[in-house]
Image: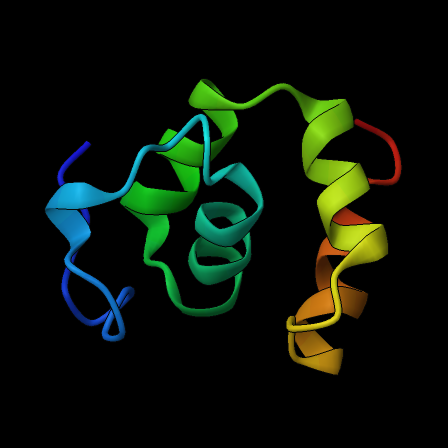
Length: 75
């Protein structure tokens, strides 16, 4: 996937490795991504990893963290 600059304003989005930087990518997309990016996230990463990142994240906004904790609860 080609990442938008607005999601990764602090780095060059073309140089992001989605596997090596999984936590970083997941956090940014969950916080600031659009529907298309969230769908890609669901397709690219497994659900246990998404749950783990949400549970342990220190950078997700509190509202975002609460929302995704609820949404991923039954997945």
